[in-house]
Image 1 (cartoon, rainbow, N blue to C red):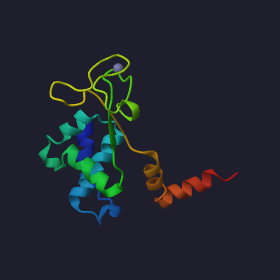
Image 2: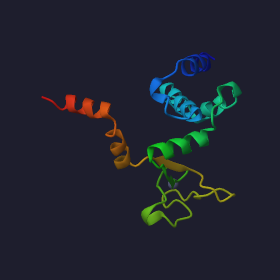
Image 3: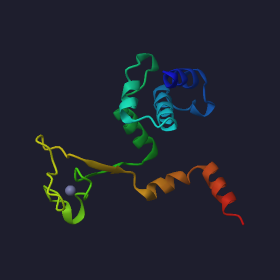
Length: 144
Ligand SMILES: [Zn+2]
């Protein structure tokens, strides 16, 4: 309850000048993502934020899509063994069961039983160094 109050109070009543160029739904989405990161809100908690209509938050899926479009970063998803033995990529890409523990790759509905998601490093670094603040911080920290 404290977190929800904080979200409502801090993110919807204090305007951030740098956000003015963005549409209000995008600003709400970005603030909710910042909030989720700051408080390590799990996906279930993020989805529950959507149950508060007064927050006018887009769905978690919509926020993820929005961030993807804004940043240019695209999440990569690999099927993974349910016991995390292997990723079904490379030589295992066509496997239907884990070569280590023999667990099936998919459930009865043909969906992967486990996935591994990540953001590729190079586009993340490129995005990081588009920020003048980050460039400045890096320059300062690399001085002897
Ligand atoms: Zn396995």
